[in-house]
Image (cartoon, rainbow, N blue to C red; front, side, top):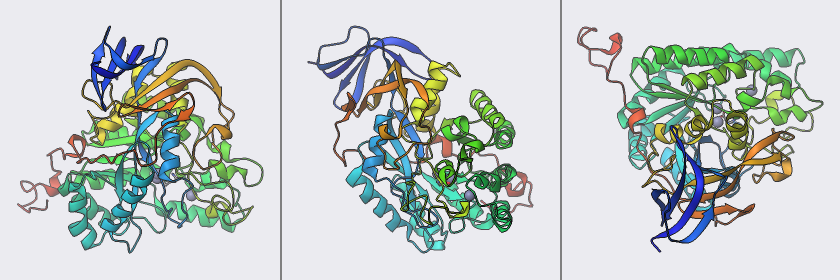
Length: 486
Ligand code: URP
Ligand code: ZN
Ligand code: ZN
Ligand code: ZN
């Protein structure tokens, strides 16, 4: 037969169209999309199903040490397995430098972990926490050329935060290497001041975590980062937007023609700060940074997604067990500052969004495909290989049963966190069959992929990371007495 596999008779969706077609696969790639294709060695009957590009989750923490030195609960094997069960076929996780670490070594270490465990394809954002001369001038340019086309920095967290001056150095280093600069942007001073003030007055319950990340700490940091990025004409990606003001700040920047991209996550669309308000330490399960906010923020974020102000929805998967190895490391009744921040989300990202966007109709199927697969693939330069059903693309495909109803339970999850913050929700629509590079890796509720079968996706910064070419007055030789600063 001409083809190895045909997915027959499903409804195929792209960012612009939904149409009935067969999808033919030879080797690892999609080689034809059309009617009446065949024959093939194997067929999958997809009548009544949706045939979608596998999800691209461009922000997940896997086998990573937190700022406080706690190892997260997953390995590459468990995290990518949970991703696959949730319909995601590519992840961009982090290679995290901490102070004193050599960046090249950091990348080698994370590559070794992923090579051993990943069941789907992966790329890395390089976290810079120690922007020494060696890091920025020796290691970074080489590592970008080796296929790590994005950098991530934190503006908060005690042992990771980058202050304004080194941030400008990193922005320029990203610019010179043609890499995207991604940021966790929150005002560190506001948060640590609030934390001290809350704890000094005895407000230590997990719910006060949400209060400590005062909402304006977000928009303030966005604004400062946007100003610095504009100064040196470097494109940026602002991670996990949680507030209406944050989204507005991004809209304003984009309205000025600045190259500012932004994401949000399911926890900011489906949870609120009230979810942290549970008896005892239970609320710690819902603690992440930034925290879930309010109902009106959720509405503002949906609007920002509709308008294109926010371009991607990632999980920010950062799993810690609700026990003494994770969230309760400081004891059964920790104060909120002692609890590791982060939620498991790789597996539930797409089912939650499918239910809201496709089954309930908020923004619709094409926008679901865009926000969860095509747009992240484009922004991080994995497209056209990833993120779309198209001839020549990798056969990374999730076949969804739009009618299947499930109630989410902790026990269903395949990651190692031991719980999901979305337990108890009833959802419609589920990814029943998942393919990675032509291999059927999830079928009938079972994984059929060996650890280490996922591959590293080398990529440059690509189109999204290219400067606009318009310098602000301060940096423009024509307007600053001829001074050449970039
Ligand atoms: O709470 C979170 N999101 N933890 C993971 C690290 C980060 O801030 O992205
Ligand atoms: Zn973050
Ligand atoms: Zn916090
Ligand atoms: Zn994160």
